[in-house]
Image (cartoon, rainbow, N blue to C red; front, side, top):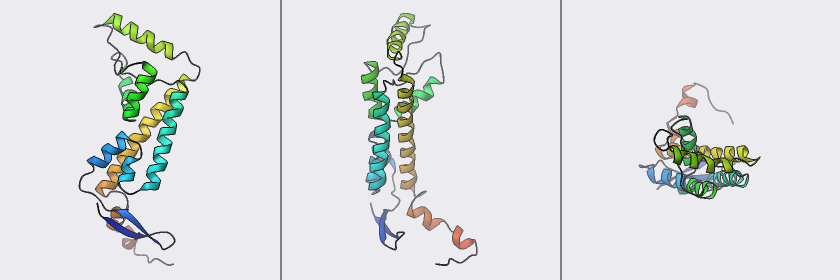
Length: 182
């Protein structure tokens, strides 16, 4: 990965990574470990801050006895919430083991397995008894959604849509006809 130098706010040169050819490795790293994609791109401060925010939100969700969503065939919108939880990557697997006692991603359909559905729902209802459950669940959803946004941000940096490569391509300041004054 090559780096380009740009002038910082105080006139100091700052190294920024140039657009890479393949965004898949940094995006996969960003999904597996919050902030890792930014670290791979040389954005250390952003990577550390993003990792701290996502992990803190996730830890708060677990400490408030929140649970992750499981896709329910009788509630189609639950699939979106399950996808949001999956955005946390391996943290989602840990949360499912911690909160549900297993890797439950779907609740059985009552038309196919009524007994299994009732057992799963009974186990999940026991977890919902906490007064802080709704807050914890919201923190877990937020952590997953934030991590998905970070993956998209890493993708944008990799393809050159954001960062120094995007600034070089943007002719807007010169095309406006104005001159810059210091």
